[in-house]
Amino acid sequence: APMVGLPAIRAGVAEALEDKAFALTFASDKVDVAKSGDLAAARGTFTQTVTDPKTGAPVTSKGSYVTVYKPQAGGAWKAVWDINTPGAGAPAR
Image (cartoon, rainbow, N blue to C red):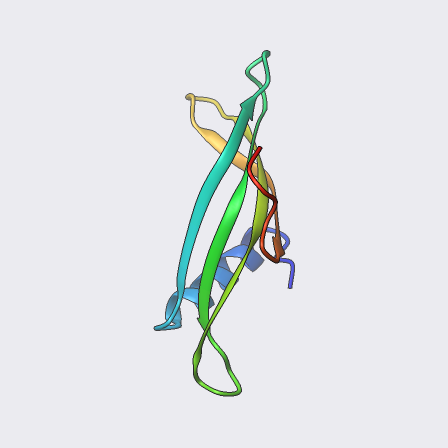
């Protein structure tokens, strides 16, 4: 389910980290930074493993993602939009 807002994101991450089977990897296949330097976008694939609540067995899923970043004061970049979609993911171009 979508997690909107910092409290929901923190709760979702805390729940995931309690799962002994939890594993998550990302692999970016493209990162673009605007010429103005005020926006960047990354896309790629992910693999996630969690415990199935019904069977107790680990379940692995794969999909694709897009994350948009904006620079913050002090030079750090912050993800401002993020979406992931289950499935095989888009082929690299």
